[in-house]
Image (cartoon, rainbow, N blue to C red; front, top):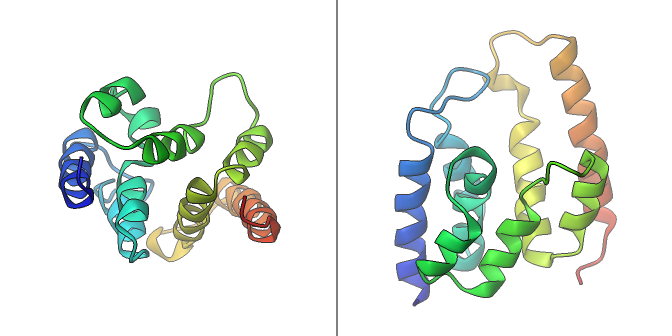
Length: 146
Protein backbone atom coordinates (compact mmCIF):
# COMPACT_ATOMS: atom_id res chain seq x y z
CA UNK A 1 0.00 0.00 0.00
CA UNK A 2 1.27 3.48 -0.87
CA UNK A 3 2.47 5.61 2.09
CA UNK A 4 -0.30 8.20 1.96
CA UNK A 5 -2.91 5.44 1.84
CA UNK A 6 -1.24 3.77 4.83
CA UNK A 7 -1.43 7.11 6.63
CA UNK A 8 -5.15 7.55 5.86
CA UNK A 9 -5.87 3.97 6.90
CA UNK A 10 -3.89 4.47 10.13
CA UNK A 11 -5.94 7.59 10.94
CA UNK A 12 -9.18 5.67 10.40
CA UNK A 13 -8.02 2.72 12.52
CA UNK A 14 -6.75 4.95 15.33
CA UNK A 15 -9.94 7.03 15.46
CA UNK A 16 -12.21 3.98 15.37
CA UNK A 17 -10.05 1.89 17.68
CA UNK A 18 -9.70 4.54 20.38
CA UNK A 19 -13.31 5.73 20.13
CA UNK A 20 -14.86 5.99 23.60
CA UNK A 21 -11.43 5.66 25.29
CA UNK A 22 -10.17 8.35 27.67
CA UNK A 23 -6.78 9.08 29.21
CA UNK A 24 -5.93 9.58 32.89
CA UNK A 25 -6.94 13.24 32.61
CA UNK A 26 -10.35 12.34 31.15
CA UNK A 27 -9.45 13.56 27.66
CA UNK A 28 -10.26 11.55 24.51
CA UNK A 29 -7.43 9.03 24.17
CA UNK A 30 -7.07 9.69 20.43
CA UNK A 31 -5.38 12.99 21.30
CA UNK A 32 -2.33 11.04 22.52
CA UNK A 33 -1.55 9.24 19.22
CA UNK A 34 -2.34 12.47 17.36
CA UNK A 35 0.20 14.40 19.45
CA UNK A 36 2.78 11.73 18.66
CA UNK A 37 1.90 11.84 14.97
CA UNK A 38 2.54 15.58 14.88
CA UNK A 39 6.00 15.04 16.40
CA UNK A 40 7.20 13.47 13.14
CA UNK A 41 7.65 14.62 9.55
CA UNK A 42 8.22 11.14 8.13
CA UNK A 43 5.00 9.43 7.01
CA UNK A 44 6.14 5.99 8.19
CA UNK A 45 6.78 7.34 11.70
CA UNK A 46 3.42 9.15 11.64
CA UNK A 47 1.67 5.85 10.82
CA UNK A 48 3.49 4.01 13.61
CA UNK A 49 2.71 6.82 16.06
CA UNK A 50 -1.00 6.64 15.20
CA UNK A 51 -1.09 2.86 15.61
CA UNK A 52 1.37 2.42 18.49
CA UNK A 53 -1.33 1.52 21.05
CA UNK A 54 -3.99 -0.17 18.92
CA UNK A 55 -2.79 -3.75 19.49
CA UNK A 56 -2.50 -3.25 23.25
CA UNK A 57 -5.64 -1.15 23.79
CA UNK A 58 -8.13 -2.43 21.19
CA UNK A 59 -9.22 -5.73 19.64
CA UNK A 60 -7.16 -5.06 16.49
CA UNK A 61 -4.38 -7.56 15.74
CA UNK A 62 -1.13 -7.39 13.79
CA UNK A 63 -2.63 -9.86 11.29
CA UNK A 64 -5.57 -7.50 10.70
CA UNK A 65 -3.14 -4.63 10.06
CA UNK A 66 -1.16 -6.88 7.71
CA UNK A 67 -4.35 -7.77 5.82
CA UNK A 68 -5.04 -4.05 5.37
CA UNK A 69 -1.72 -3.72 3.54
CA UNK A 70 0.60 -2.09 6.07
CA UNK A 71 4.28 -2.64 5.30
CA UNK A 72 6.36 -5.09 7.31
CA UNK A 73 8.60 -2.35 8.74
CA UNK A 74 5.51 -0.66 10.17
CA UNK A 75 4.12 -3.95 11.49
CA UNK A 76 7.45 -4.87 13.11
CA UNK A 77 7.63 -1.48 14.83
CA UNK A 78 4.04 -1.75 16.10
CA UNK A 79 4.74 -5.27 17.38
CA UNK A 80 7.84 -3.95 19.16
CA UNK A 81 5.74 -1.18 20.74
CA UNK A 82 3.19 -3.67 22.07
CA UNK A 83 4.03 -4.90 25.57
CA UNK A 84 3.59 -8.64 25.91
CA UNK A 85 1.81 -10.15 28.89
CA UNK A 86 4.79 -12.37 29.71
CA UNK A 87 7.44 -9.63 29.84
CA UNK A 88 8.43 -7.04 32.40
CA UNK A 89 8.39 -3.36 31.54
CA UNK A 90 12.21 -3.41 31.43
CA UNK A 91 12.19 -6.33 28.97
CA UNK A 92 9.65 -4.45 26.87
CA UNK A 93 11.82 -1.31 26.72
CA UNK A 94 14.86 -3.41 25.81
CA UNK A 95 12.87 -5.00 22.96
CA UNK A 96 11.71 -1.56 21.77
CA UNK A 97 15.34 -0.43 21.67
CA UNK A 98 16.12 -3.10 19.07
CA UNK A 99 13.84 -1.53 16.44
CA UNK A 100 14.91 1.91 15.22
CA UNK A 101 11.41 3.02 14.16
CA UNK A 102 9.80 1.76 17.37
CA UNK A 103 12.50 3.43 19.45
CA UNK A 104 11.82 6.83 17.86
CA UNK A 105 8.08 6.54 18.48
CA UNK A 106 8.58 5.25 22.03
CA UNK A 107 10.80 8.25 22.86
CA UNK A 108 8.01 10.57 21.67
CA UNK A 109 5.47 8.45 23.57
CA UNK A 110 7.45 8.69 26.81
CA UNK A 111 7.88 12.44 26.45
CA UNK A 112 4.16 12.88 25.89
CA UNK A 113 3.29 10.61 28.81
CA UNK A 114 5.71 12.51 31.06
CA UNK A 115 3.78 15.75 30.56
CA UNK A 116 2.01 15.95 33.91
CA UNK A 117 0.56 19.39 33.09
CA UNK A 118 -2.47 17.66 31.58
CA UNK A 119 -3.41 16.11 34.96
CA UNK A 120 -5.58 18.04 37.41
CA UNK A 121 -3.62 16.78 40.41
CA UNK A 122 -0.50 14.67 40.76
CA UNK A 123 -0.29 11.81 43.23
CA UNK A 124 2.44 9.37 44.29
CA UNK A 125 1.48 6.86 41.60
CA UNK A 126 1.90 9.59 38.95
CA UNK A 127 5.35 10.45 40.32
CA UNK A 128 6.42 6.79 40.30
CA UNK A 129 5.19 6.40 36.72
CA UNK A 130 7.06 9.59 35.78
CA UNK A 131 10.29 8.15 37.23
CA UNK A 132 9.81 4.88 35.33
CA UNK A 133 9.23 6.78 32.08
CA UNK A 134 12.20 9.05 32.75
CA UNK A 135 14.51 6.07 33.28
CA UNK A 136 13.25 4.48 30.06
CA UNK A 137 13.73 7.71 28.14
CA UNK A 138 17.33 8.03 29.31
CA UNK A 139 18.00 4.41 28.32
CA UNK A 140 16.44 4.72 24.85
CA UNK A 141 18.17 8.01 24.09
CA UNK A 142 21.56 6.41 24.86
CA UNK A 143 21.01 3.42 22.56
CA UNK A 144 22.52 3.92 19.13
CA UNK A 145 20.26 3.23 16.11
CA UNK A 146 20.30 -0.36 14.89
